[in-house]
Image (cartoon, rainbow, N blue to C red; front, side):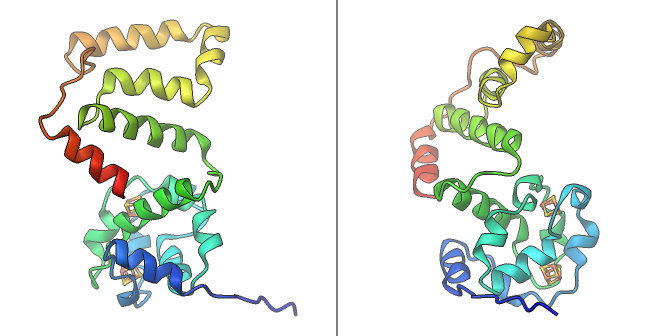
Length: 188
Ligand code: SF4
Ligand code: SF4
């Protein structure tokens, strides 16, 4: 039988906890997080496995996993955890770390949405849906295929309906503390 060598990098979780804390070391593998997670069908690692691998210093497996990108930040896991492990926040941290270390996302569409979302938040201090949608379409590479296939017309009709219901503002509502939000995002 072939043996797997783990080569743990224990500084991985130490650095994460310094940026948190996320209390990952308190996990006793009960799997309550995984059993309540609505996104496991699309994950390659279950949330409890991500925590376990992080504890075991398996940086590469964690940062290259689909799971950190598929996670919807719904916080169900964090709410269910009996040990106060901040799982959803830790997933977010791993996402940011993967971006900072230029690790390619196995879910490029999610990465495009993530970056477009943060760009609008950096600009206005809060999400600006009117900018998010075109930015995402451009970043995800869907812009040209939509033009080619003509599906941009459906998008435009949908945007008009949302605009009429006041759900798609064309001008961003910039908050007073946008500089603080910007600094927060830069330092994270
Ligand atoms: S619910 Fe908490 S303690 Fe249980 S496996 Fe998940 S992270 Fe670990
Ligand atoms: S925050 Fe992410 S990992 Fe936690 S339950 Fe929601 S989708 Fe699953």
